[in-house]
Amino acid sequence: MAVSTTGEVSGSERRGRRIILWRHGQTSWNVERRFQGSTDVELTGTGVAQARRSARLLAGLRPDAIVASDLKRAAATAAELAALTGLHVVHDEALRETYAGVWQGLTHDEIIARYGEEYAAWKRGEPVRRGGGELETEVADRAAPVVLRHAEKLPEDGTLVVVSHGGTIRTTIGRLLGLDPRSWESLGGLSNCCWSVLGEGAKGWRLMEHNAGTLPEPVLGDDD
Image 1: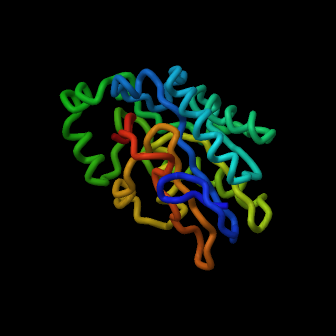
Image 2: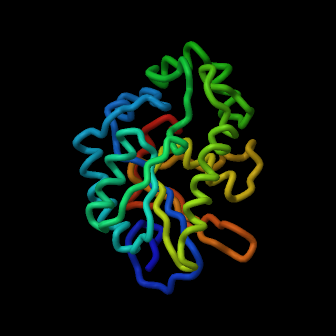
């Protein structure tokens, strides 16, 4: 089974291990364009519905394992897939979203107004401690090894679902693909409850799908 570019499930032979990196459902701070970072914000009713719909699609891919951030929005999203598959969710704080210091809780417009130069440098791909928080490479340092450790436990054609956050997923993809950190910003953000797929190739991990789910949705969150 595989996911098409529109996110629908189609039949095809499974080859090699697969990592599905799934962003959590919508929160009130996403809607308000308020920077969440590592703040523990719950899903909205819409976010729960998104998680349930996406879980039905992902369950069709017959995942072998689920690992998730321990923040409420990711844990609740993962729980929807666990309910359908019967799999146990392993929670790991290393998969939390980037800590962004004083940016957390501010709206996009407030960040631009107060920290415009810092924001622009981040978008240029420069190493920036947003709000005095973590560097993107530090996020990758903690998250990517967790993903790899769980992927290594899969059978040779197994599928791992990683439920995390937009920024953490982007940096993890960049690290697993061996991309220069300055180019990680070229990976577009993920919409709520959409996912990216990495497939195991002869030379390492390859990006097979990005921001898949259904029809395109707006990217609401720290990476918009």
